[in-house]
Length: 634
Image (cartoon, rainbow, N blue to C red; front, side):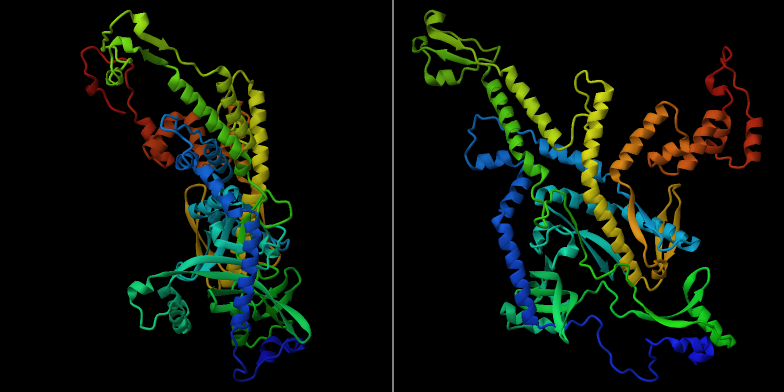
């Protein structure tokens, strides 16, 4: 049959063998030949070693302090430690929280624009790359993706790392789909010997999360008996017990096994609770089997895969397809199996996977000084009213003095003896100018260390010229852009690569992608894994800081009339830039036509011309004795 359809060339492929009848053997391609006990023991050992390493760095307490400073819990902590008296001011100026909010808004208010580069230089590949660029950017602009990036960015200075997990969810839609989700850094254990936050350098990443006992039994029904025995339940548990949750470990790992005197590297994932292993398989986000397909060679397009329609036509017509060969292809975008995590890091020295420090850790003592000086100023101000001192010669008792309110203008006092002998007012001190000056300097120093100077915050201080203010803003943008490049941009590229891997692996049937156009219109694209060629790359074409700069420059150029409307609306990321420009130009050049088209809704030229010709002329000044309501209405 193959010779009849493809000619003799199909048999010249030496690496292909074709089964003539039956199934010789059927094996699970994800099966991992690994002993449960060995797996549990090794993983527990790796996790314990990692935890001991980070315990020596006092990681838990450092993270807690960062969170306390970010949330402004210092005053509450001082009260719990009895460091504040009842009369002390509960002053707190949480500059860290304010600065972090500005940084997050600057870094993540707009997600980066991504560009998919074609795998080969031909018109068809370039068109496909443009389609994938639209799909990837459309997903990145979704609210949920922005939330995931924003939360990971917020976690990094608090926990010294931000974590994003990429996974396939078969329950999404009709055919399943990929998604991104945040993983709290405290629910992650990782290979502490890795010298960077690149997950490819880690031998394992363990994600710990809660799962109800009922869900565990549903996912791994063959482990039901083992679970009940581990929990010490002899009888069949009721719904209340089944709703109880266990914190299980999902461990993505690299394993080496020896086969015929050679070491083979295997990438896998396993699920366990304590020593009970629920399952372990090869990395499910990798095509291990491949697919045998038929190719022909085209002089212009090169190697071309034959479609089912081509093969069906050849079988129907009996015309052989010459030059056809069988080959096995693997539906992978990545070069090798990867653990599905994206980690955000910035302050690294090549010594461990977590950041060595963070901006919050670096400014927390400065925050203490800001609060201390503010508390001193408040306490001194409270004492500035002074003290009223009464002599026993006044005839007043202690209870009488307590009832005296010297700030009450309607209260009068009757004292025995000369006033100078029985009453004295001791004036209070006022906060010095030096205290206010130091307080202001500390606040600005803290903002400066966090790259949020007054210019970035929209505050113009003193007589600084606009050029100096602009330099401060550019300095902040430069520092933030450097951090964004290593965190948000790197994460976005990795997330996009994972999107391509999921599409190439799981989009065996057409998925409809809803694309929101810049003109406000919605389009649907049909996406399958065949769209993704080998060798495609994803790069950031415009970061979030680039977009903010471009938006600011757009307004500046518009102010000196050095830009056109379409470019202006594109730079500020307004919807439907072409339509906005058309309406603006029409409004400026022909207001009457603009009124008829966009206010009255007369779309055609004939309708607008007729409406303009029939408009009555309205007198500039109403005639005497004529009511306004009697005038013709336009």
